[in-house]
Length: 349
Ligand code: NAD
Image (cartoon, rainbow, N blue to C red):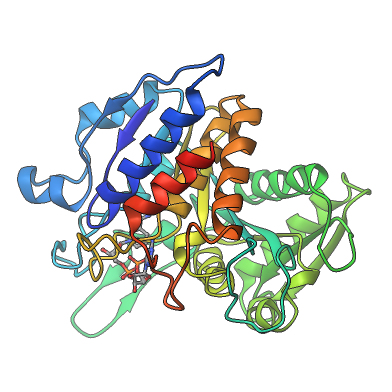
């Protein structure tokens, strides 16, 4: 497996995650073969490229990739966008079209929403990863007077992400509030043709899954419902940019971005990373919450067929939180430090 420590808090949280993975391997019937590669803003500063050909080939060859967050707002391309981020290269390059972002309220974590019991928020944002508005990255029209970015939807792209969402819903227990297995298509079909097309194809795909309840909602109203009534959601499927936004909103309701893992899944390749970025504001201070990174590694083990080890890691993180061995400040940083949090989870294992 390829490991990319990343920038900012990346190396700190990856170190704790490797500690947890080591503990998870003790006595287990599998072992991970780690291959470290540098990529991101630091790599761009050193070499002029965020991802070398060699690292990209290693990612293609690997059974899985564990990636820390990357990026440095000071490392920019001439068009003003950041040059040290990898999403545009890895997601399309590995055809990792499904960005699976679980949003779950763990025991011991105070939600920014009052009066919620652990488990009251438990949904997954299934974000399309290779098309939508971000397909315009580096390709939009720019002039001194105006700019234009486009939003790409293809039948193949929408069909496969919709299918992935329904398949995922089949493996889950439904929404926490009513136990209904439900896939919510989130769009702005009332305004943009592209979203109307997305919705139409979603409804076509839904016919193949009569056991799952399909529904369509506008993204603006959904943002409000994710705050006011999060328990009614099970799986949400949406376009690239909207998925990016709404999953971070979800993170704000479950203890912060440091609680949000993700997997970028293709049919053959996948890579795993926290939802959050490199958090330069807290880097090097032993304050970053490593749980998103640790749970991303658990998702990776699941992908690799080690579901039991993946569950053991999730349960260990859950126990460390509920026992108070890991405590979060309201801003999402860890009270006792990143290293102590990593030790608490590996200790539980
Ligand atoms: P960010 O996610 O890095 O940080 C947003 C806020 O959340 C900050 O206050 C930060 O301190 C906090 N935060 C993030 N992760 C945390 C954690 N594990 N524990 C506690 N607090 C945490 O977003 P940003 O500030 O918009 O971006 C910073 C850099 O990260 C940029 O260069 C951006 O391009 C990059 N980025 C990378 C990825 C990625 O690698 N997948 C994703 C998003 C942003």
